[in-house]
Length: 213
Image (cartoon, rainbow, N blue to C red; front, side, top):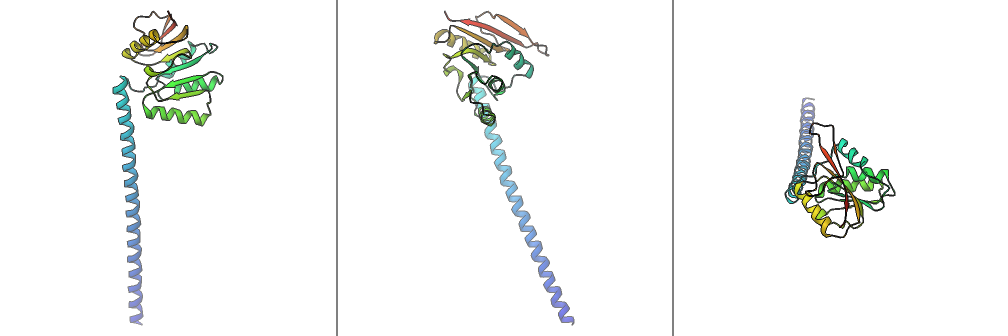
């Protein structure tokens, strides 16, 4: 009888040890999997950050969203009845172009964005919302074709506005274009209207009616 009890205890101990080993192994596998996921997420975040830094150094401005107040003011300054495309010269995360394309399905809307991650996010929204009238290019606006534009919207930087004015002067564009710019003005062109936002910085929204000479 004692021998039977002893054998039973030994078998029980072996079973417990096997369960402990199995539990430790399973936990180890989970930890290894979590490590690989964490490493993958780290490199993904690093890649996204580096791409944004690269595009910021290349263009001179990071892909920042216009505030909702600025975006609405810019949209209010635009006539959607004008023939031709609305082009966003630095469409970023797509907030403005997606709003226009969604609310005006018969309007051709084009966005140019150099930074690949914001561009990719905006493309995902475009397809998820089924916006066939919206075209998004991962491209510097300096190389953009503006010949179809009736309206240009932008949130650039001083150097970008200089480049835009030079582009408008030397390339083929429509005779009349409405330009709406958040914060920054064209260097040598008088705006038709300047709208000051009721925010902390009294952010200016510049409206131009550009005519080719």
